[in-house]
Image (spheres, rainbow, N blue to C red):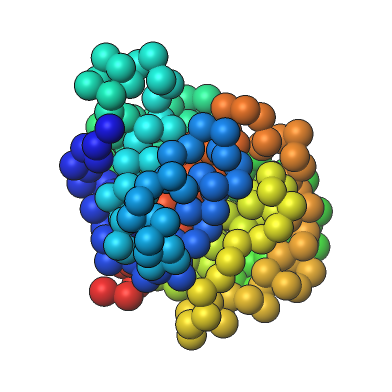
Length: 243
């Protein structure tokens, strides 16, 4: 087996080791019967210095994107990340374009997850969520805090990028992590994370987390690839903010 060069994963080479912990843990804990990362000699020698075996981590992502039978016909290699991402989007009935780049497809996946679960929040929770993200209309225009209206605001913020976009991604990924795995992300300590922790720990963070249930997201088809795609989207955003 070998890592296939993948332009959509190469940014992981510059991600700090601590930020890669959740990705490595995903394979070790949730795919313990099928993963091969923990058996790798470089992993055994250098863990937790993940950058010393970053290609093996990227290979693991690709391998989980295809089944063993299919991988045999690829020369025992896995699936390119964008193909994995599109497969997740197809399973979750995301409206996206296969010709778009991976980052835009990740945003479409994020928007779909938000759309599905904003419906479970009441008007007060929706308003508080926007306030926490500093996205309440500064013009004081009367707004109806419906899931559709809030979804439109969040989609615009995600598309615009910046800190609000990162907050939305982090809150969503953390909520999905708690719903599936029973615990939040391991957050590397830095100034950006510190500014988001209050939202995660506060009533809005709990409301968003509570909108997901294990039944929604923990099916076999999603337990590895869907969380991996969301985590990669988060890491991509962090990488861009740090550049």
